[in-house]
Amino acid sequence: MTAFRKVATVSEVPEGTLKSCEIANQKFLVAHTSDGFYAVVDECSHDMAPISTGQITGNEIICPRHQARFDLKTGAVKAPPAIVSIDTLELKIDGDNILVFVEE
Picture (cartoon, rainbow, N blue to C red):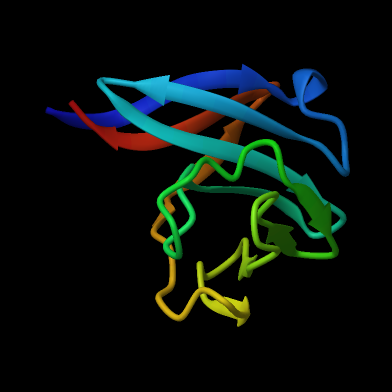
């Protein structure tokens, strides 16, 4: 089953922060930048480590282990050592709720 699921409220993810989430064994993060909210898988494509403890810079997330950078909008690699993009998830805001489209 696929559906939009509530993962947080807007007030729980202030600008410049991220929130680690898991639904149906899918780990992802929700990030809030000056351009809005984004959801990406919580796994660096370089070494499969979680990136949810990384830093947000502009619209990029920096992996805490080897500093690979990924675009939060597209999942594209912005700096090595990663060479493969990460998956993004569809996200929408409904009132104060942050909803992410997930497969269960």
